[in-house]
Image: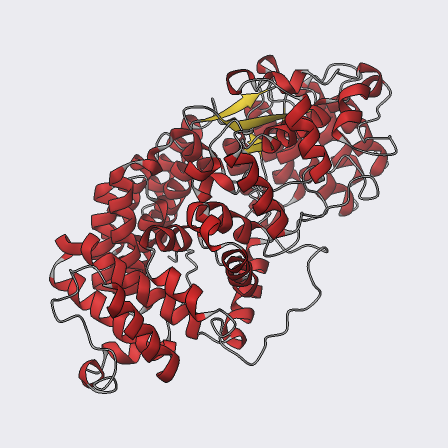
Length: 608
């Protein structure tokens, strides 16, 4: 069994350091020395300055190897001192990151983007590495600032994704710091959010796909101008949220701006609803029933400016767009949701309220039984997972125990990267003991068990624990439950695996039926690949009968459309016709609803 976990690899110098005690006392005897009072004392300013001078002379990777190695040894000797050792670990991570060459980074980054399927045509055709390390172009004074700001460094490495284009992330941060060091000091989290979002251009389908690129160019503002805009607006009290007090994890949903600065200024002066009533911004845009009746779901106007949307009116996606952009103009992180209901699709929005809790149902239609919604993650331009959305609204990542879990997870990740699976497992176990909802810590723990060669039964115990920890988060509960059934089946425990699968199917058939749809479609896909047509049809009818009643367009998207298309492409028109007819009978779409029209369109496309 293998677990998917993608980290930034530490420098080869660190691996060599951990296998050679001589390196601990050799190369730097005349330069920076390990802290005389031990690694549990916070780094002193003069100490960091000497470290930086040494690194500029002999190379950041070598210094980073020593700092990281010393930190890991100290942690291994005393995990209870993890929080005091942590600042040194962060200094070591910066050092090794700056010493990595672009030639090593870019192929790994391209692989991560392809793996996550977040590449798009607005990105450059090719990314050619420069013959230099990632930290070469950073000013020494900015490096020193980073090395001496632990809270910022923690946010950086906590949020950093394999899909972040580091050369541009670092360049933006350095530029913003150079432009206004005093503002950067106060608004460092805003700067980090901008750097993580603005490292690559947004995709063609952002912020939604129902307006042409001619009318709404998919371009972000210039990073420095946006930083200055929000700093000035925050200092003058024109915003509903205090931007200086928000974290970068929240602010990435503020800086993904799709409108011009003129529109932002217009929204600040013209859309004056207080934060407690911000949800009403959605319904302020008149709903255009005539467009829906005429099947015109795309915007047909000559421009897509906020004042025009307000005066002209629009459908749900336009209302959600208007609401999010007006919220952002007033300093409120927000996001558009798109989802499927019984007979059609819908769009609504979410925003960060006055208690720094996410309200994710503004404009949602309860009676449509919308199963879930999809929203862009501005950092990667992929979709936010269900548990990521829940984590935002639950807010537990702001608690002290999550910080403690984050510290131990950081050590676990470094141990894993150096090949020390045993130490990684121990540190990851401490992390999940502090906060059982720390997903990455569970992933490190499971991967460490695999690399350690732990017995399958030991891994299955951890999988059961993980599934239990996330029983309120259906996508994660299902993920770990399916890994458990896979392990059971691999070692011949077929009855136990079947039982676990039935439990999962029953658990998720209610509030999160779409996960059951995905599970059923996975079984149907296996049948499509290995079983004869009559067996495929038998299983399809069984799935439709079990999950179809009342499920609407979500089930159509997940199961009916792909199966009917599979049969039609294979030249089995009669079977495809029967499959679609049975689905129509069970789903019983309202005449002339979007579901009814899409089923008819599927039939026309395949000439059924």
